[in-house]
Image 1: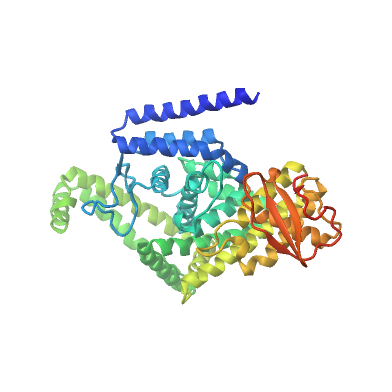
Image 2: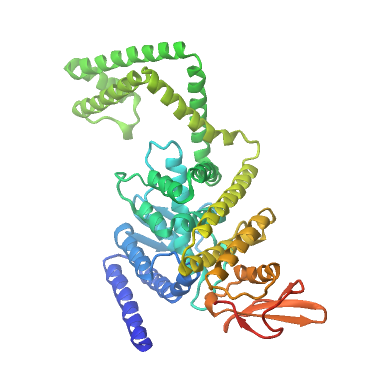
Length: 521
């Protein structure tokens, strides 16, 4: 059976390479680019099995590679790899790649993970959230897209077929990655991938996302998570895109001005009435101009005198079409103002503005970096609270096994450049509580073996499985040793020996000192 599976694996690998080679034949990529892409494919094939083991909730290798080939086939017209020493064609602003979505082009240095990241970016739409969701239609779209692209690089970046290693400096954005992995654990990779790949806005995935969170974790948790997520997305968007900062500030001022006007309802209604009159007058002028050849010609000359060469209007027929579109916009604005005069719509509009304003209040902070750090920490605490719901609802051995792997993966995620989640002092108490609940549930379902009849000793020893990078925990052993008056714990498999960890004197042990014991039940 094993021999048959190995043969099938080789056939599958051959098909992948053949499929990619067929795509590359239709492209005008040079030999270096083709060789690089085939090299990336080979490494992903070798590493992906370990990624599937470590994370559990991921695309299958077939889905991942098919998606990668599809992006190269349909979204990538040109890839140019330039030497690091090529000063003449140096990539500006200390970047390692450039992605041009309009021309479907990538320029990059010969760094495989950066090329893979750039390919992933090419395969994404700018917005995956409807425009009606103010601001987060941009900022949350960006957060999820960036997080997904970092996620796509992971099998190449952190796995090599025999070990699992993360180098913080190789992660494009630790903050984006942390938040994205939180969301993946909460709602699953399948939902997020469908959301990102959704080509039409017929399905409102943001609404479905909130609904899914509410159904699984309750309304209170959904509200808290969405509030934190929205604010984090805004601050991250501004942190990594300085141009966006001015746009957001402008929107903030507009909303504050509008809310101020609405405090005096009578004055606000008067202003709407005046605006309606002006719009009506504008619509009338457009109609008269379009239907009068002389007036249209005058407008044509007048507009072209004010426009630069590249924006000149080429004919009166085109001007007529432009003005018809302007009329349509004004009609919509007129209808909108009419609706606003309805008392119910007035209240609804005011509530919407207040909600937008609440998001933008985070910009009032004197230290936005500090505010972002506080929100990020609060988000992790909220995530752990929701993970606790999943632990409580476990009703099968398979479910608790997945949670063990999820929590181990989460604990080893980078929190910042210096520390992993497990090392964050402000999360220590929350992490200890969750690890205890997982261990209790795992022993109940006979997934983990009890080490001691003393509950405290048992938890203190077993919680160390959430700190090791042994790929397959089912193959892990532990051993308790004594050196003089000190006790040490070792966790290992046949390939990896983790460093010894000093532990408190264990009570009521069910295993012998210096004897290895399987961890998994």
